[in-house]
Length: 236
Image 1 (spheres, one colour):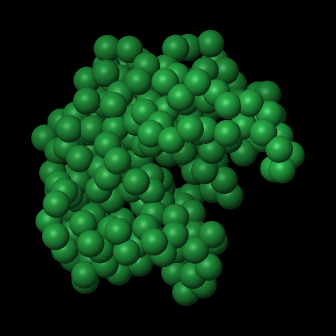
Image 2: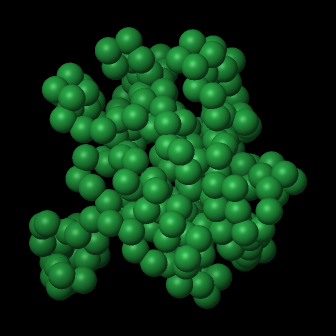
């Protein structure tokens, strides 16, 4: 099986919105998370979807799933206090019903413009390598500063990439990485690939796309609205 895990447990505090998490912001009559879910629901290689959601928004999510006829959501999982805990909550459920070699495609709910190509390439690469990360080459020079005031170094741009999601793994690999992190008392990781690296496994790269951006600011919301309105991207 190929299972998408959509992480929707955040509250969007960086955007300063107090009445709802950013994944539930309405864009042209549809919450952001629904655009994201539709992308995976419409992918023929995705067999099932698990959504990790804030407890107080689970009822709303179920209403949206019915209203927009998202068919593949099999599990709705309560989110944790951190992203790491949220993903681990999903892994606990999946481990009871899925096989060790099944593919888990972990994706941010607030990256609604993920393309079918990215999703399929993640599934194929994860099946081949066991662990993959979606990235795009850095178009800008990256500055490393330890104190926020002076430059420590300017890394070679050709070796630098910007990480996106999905991040995709064999279920057994990701579960082992989370188990090791907890054993090492690491509880607040924001990146599953980092946990897999700490397990001693290689993580291969899958090419992402600039439009697969994460909604973190009002500028991102404006860009998302423009892309949807203009129909310049594949959103389902």
